[in-house]
Amino acid sequence: MKTLIVAPWGDPIGWKEVRYLVEFPSQNFKDITLSEAEYRKASTLAALHEAFEKELGWECFSLIFIPSTLAVNSPNFYENPPEKYVTLVEITLNYIKKIAENKPILPRDDFSLKVVPSIGLFPSRDKNIETLFKGSTRIFYAAVYYNILQELSKNAYDMVVLDLSHGVNFMPVVAKNAVKYAVYAYTASEKKRK
Image (tube, rainbow, N blue to C red; front, side, top):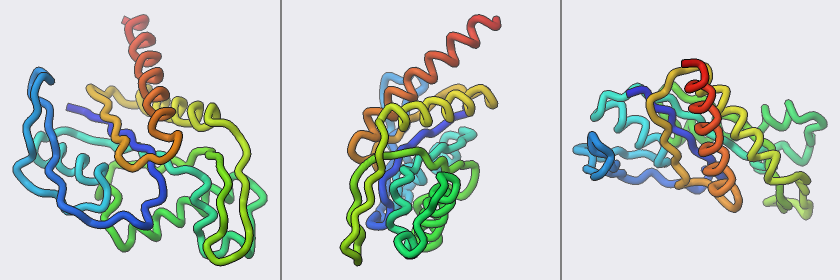
């Protein structure tokens, strides 16, 4: 079964490696069973991805949404603040990749990190400075919706799994709606083609 796993994430800096038992749906999706193996990971997404592939034989691709606001946690953010969004994205991706070097937060392969616009007021950890990211949750919604619809259009997935375990604040609710409506839109467009 070709499966798209979608997950909005907060800041993984404090996540610890734990042992996961993964719940699997039954053939008819009415019951669940537990994985035979334990998966030592620092994110539920990494455990789900590996368990689905190893134990169920599913072909998985994970789409991970990272808030652009995580850039403020980068060591040099305040010394050289970005002037363009593309630079903010690069800083955020580097921050996540650095964390992933030291703990198993990402699947081994077949995943994509998408930095999406986010909002909030963030104090620096070691300076007396606050950074305000202005905007709306609608922009976050639009970015998630667009990226999911684009991924669904490129590949014929049998299933979409939404992992809300590590999302924070508004992200889980907004991501849930964006996924739901992107799947509806994709399904409707596919029915029209047939």
